Length: 483
Image 1 (cartoon, one colour):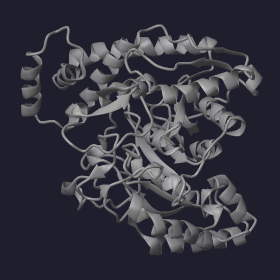
Image 2 (cartoon, rainbow, N blue to C red; image 1 turned 135 degrees about the vertical axis):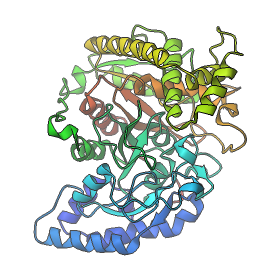
Image 3 (tube, rainbow, N blue to C red; image 1 turned 60 degrees about the vertical axis):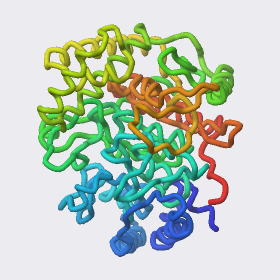
Image 4 (cartoon, helix red, strand yellow; image 1 turned 90 degrees about the horizontal axis):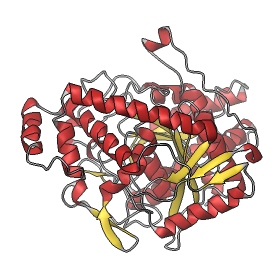
């Protein structure tokens, strides 16, 4: 097997431009990986090879004429199943949506196609994008290539698994609850959750919906941090009505070298304990950086409690679900909420209250969210980035039984709710902050883990630059064995 399928997308683009191989040949290499391994992993669940081969031939013609559209011209890509791809179903894993066939491409996907990327398929998701596993009744279960008995993450689980196995070089995902970050962490690849609103979301909506929900974003996944940075240059920017008067111009990082960097590191939380094997990799990164950066602290944090951040995030996150709930379901949630002790802030009461939240209640929760966002911004006056976990542990065994909030995972010898780790999802996401996942090695069990790099709003290029430095100095993507 050629190792070309594991090169970064930018390197592949350079190889194409230098005519070391053709776009048709490169697509063939990725399709060979797909043919060999997809049955085992089930990452790519829909293909259009005729369209892809035509796009690859067109890329070769542009390259021959020295008219390349972007650094990714001719590079193979796939996209999360929920992104609209003209002429192919967007089911969101729901059997009721198998006939939902869009007539246009999602804006983010179209921007990659305009850049010459060769789209050949879609990747798997959980039902309604609502799990950290990727299984549904339409396309089945996606497995983690590092251990097929474990989850690849979700909801962009197929995206991360396809990248990790060399089936694709570029991916687009979405993230409201770590749906880019969690799979990147579990599968050992890179992912970026942009600042809210920076990457267009149109074409990644349920049928009949035109408004974008709170918190959620679209963003890139790849096998290199530099790929993410180059993808953001293509993906970022307003469209439609907003483009009439608004532009996106992401500022360059304040720092130009590691020695200028001010780093805070958070290893665990009272809201979500983190497995020690994972913490040890974060400590190894922190101790490595301590010798190279301007200052590093394991104590610095924004001036609000982790528990308040978690409760505020769960409230606003679960409130987004009411967009698809009936009046009867909301009334039933309100009745159920009255049965909980007012002091009970465990997940089910928080979720149920959010389903029944009044508009005034939402406004108050949103006000506190924005107050905490300002505290984050003040924190970043003194610190350039905060490094923290993406989840509570490495990838855990498949568990499709019961409700998501009823499932448990092992963390430091205890079985804890999978929902606890939503703290790490919301720590940046609820406050609209950008955060990047970079792989930082393997735990003793042989599973990859990643660091979450959080920075202030619209400083996407700062978290991406730190991810690039970590990749160069500490280590980056490693293919899973056997692929």
